[in-house]
Figure 1: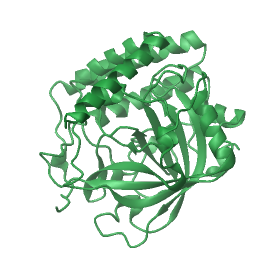
Figure 2: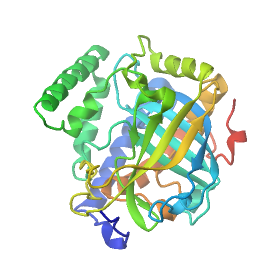
Figure 3: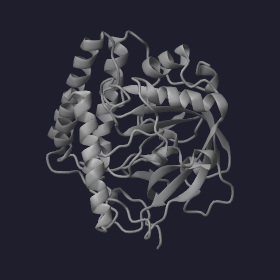
Length: 359
């Protein structure tokens, strides 16, 4: 099927969006402040716990077809990249409790009209999670998602593990009956395995130059199958697994784009709808590589947790975030980053190159 061109009618402001956005941002900021008081240190209001900060390169493929040679991928070239691997909750929990995992990428030295010039720098951030859709994919549904997150964050670790196990059982039954598990079940049914072997997704849509797309990041070569490898026990078991891996070998991923080919079946305003891969497959656009390194040295941990910031709106107009969830994220990420840096008494500064990232 033919990729549909981008135009301003792709997005539709939702009913009561402004009020709901204010409510969501206020609730997230309040939760972040409570956690900061408990720890005497401010963390992100989501994906608070990092497991690795890795330096690498993103090589855009040559000879891409015109519909894929868009935005920062319009020409074959190599970019410097720093990535943060994390867990989704907004507080610091033991890795023995399964959770959705995040993979945030900062592509450095990109050219193009900036979405938020005030942030400074010339970087493009892509934020991804290890399942393809968001359980509550509209601004109207998102407050219910926050309530679920808040309840799970306060639950004892044993209960969190039991919920994940029960959700995996439901997921398996649904699949055996030929159905597709809902996003909520998929989100809860996380296995405690090595996240390097997972496939990650933007979940919501972005502008892709003259088109609209969702991006995914798929493991390659030596990483395939790691998502079936348990990480073991311990409060920082995931960090230990990733540190052990990068001490011996690197990691390679394929960055892919799934172009919108049907506005009704592939909506922008509802991030809970899975785009059909048969109608529009994920197609490779670049290769992401990380060499052997120490991904969580004390210096890099402090830089990644306290200084480094990722924001889907930190980028160029050619990759503008789309849909109500992405519009909510604009003030939400700004609020979270500003509060974190203010409470930790740190200046906000974008890295200019990999030389700015500690070894």
